[in-house]
Image (cartoon, rainbow, N blue to C red; front, side):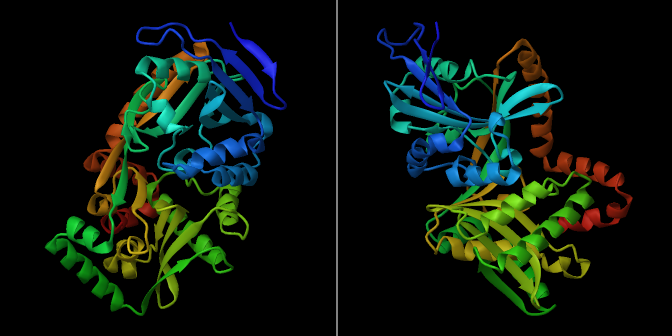
Length: 413
């Protein structure tokens, strides 16, 4: 039985628990409130966020700005608050999209962040048994309106410092790996992650770059100086995607508008741009979101000028980032999911991420089966460097203007 009561703007459902093996007899009722307006859940969201987040996609101001910049209609926004004993236990910010005739709820930022997860009262949630957690998630998500499927992409297996925290959230399927560098200072990162040969290699690349002109490194925050840096970063990424033969995810004007607005005064999203220049020209950029002692790198770019590829500006920029961020007080540098050379060299923490599925209709159940198989294949490709390089090579063959540059970019990325 489901009771429906109006609580102002949100819809609230009171769902009595069904007894299950391992659950207590006096299992409390799960109250589920939903709203299409982000402002309705601001106070609850900020309380959860203050305890810590695993992704910029869990930041109220990040999502608020994303919704505004992308002009997402209210009816396609859904903010789900699940409570026990009238105390909020979890919040899920969901975006409804239509994909090939199927309505899907998923995270707002999608592939633009390395992982995502529900915001959670961790202490109270971990006090539940596994059976109680399963009942909780079923109550929270099983009856969401107007969609066939809930697809929660890239939920970390280890979140808030706890393994398997979301194991009972729908059906989970392994996807990719999240890479983080976690150190107390630069010396620890340097001695732990860089061998003698690696230091020599970095030094040789730096000398080649220095030989081409004056090299400088700077940090740009919200100011007039940010816009030209972002513009050049997007140009560099567009050329790189062209070489790879893949669609540019930053091409839509509303995506660029979002990133530009994060750098405007009053955005409440703290951004740091790490910029490497050669004779004043931008040759590498890293776009990072700041949250407490964590730094999340969402975008990295580098020049495609063949003249400077031997100096590997992308790696030289990252080296300078690593030399500074931990001594500035950051303790976690999140480089996102998917294997690259830079992550292999610098990241000492690897966390598996899973895609979680909750079908809401018969059509949704069919999609879950098909999409799950595709994700298995995709993860195997992205997790195998040789196979990934082969796939990139095949794509590049369909880009005649880019095929001559592909090998050079692969070696210098």
